[in-house]
Image (tube, rainbow, N blue to C red; front, side):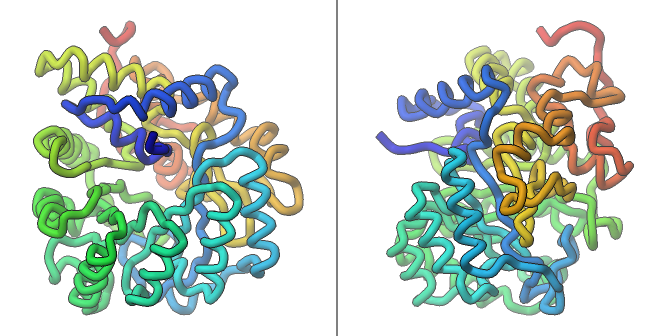
Length: 386
């Protein structure tokens, strides 16, 4: 039976799909974790470095070739990987910055694989070549995420502040030729949100395994008027719902870091009379949440600090110095988010249990990670959702 992971569970909540038998095991595990108040996350995302070969306009950590970060040396990095694996974390995503700028990148990926965790790579794709792609395939990489962020060369160049579109297309084609499973990723922002349909079509053209739409996080360079409005986010989520449903038998289209998405899916499935979809999304949403931070998901900084999620840049302590399990269970920040001790309209919203709002967006905009999500324009109704 095929093993499934947290990113697969997002895909299992797409409208109109048939749930495979292999999903039952994962859903039972997530339900068991919730009953125990999430004793360990299923997945961690490691910001391996702040350094990057690009200066993208939406980068929340302001990555660039000049960025400085106190990265863990190889020995300590391997120790951190072992700590996460021993704690029961199932998957580790390498992110950045650009993870491939580290010379020991492949060595660390191999250590993750040897530890029993599943490594997933998120890269801008510019530093890939045939040799690296072959090495990743040999290591048994299940998912290779390539961030493109634009459906056209013009948009790509404007966001990336470079003219390397053709190189990415070439590397993407080479990864496909070698049989790697590709996630084509787009960070939604003012410069590209009207290209979402075309971006999904680009994923179809290349035959990728999944198109991943990610919401922008308002930190760093992303604070410079790059976010879309709450109304535009609502419309975007409706586009996602339709395309995801239309392509359910062709290609996966998923969305991440956009906490209101489960509410939109529940509303639309109810409007369409898709009762089974509505019940499935609602049930799974209660286990997974629209925002899985500090529950099924966490982040790790280049220095080895534990974060509630990779986009909520609040360190709760250093994993190597204080221990992962100690920080995960006893940090007040972690417990506040895990217990959904949130404020404002999110607290009284009938969708709180399946959503909870984006804690990173609340922190980025108002400086309070427990505040109502500024990116959601929904007005809660009294009483429970029917």
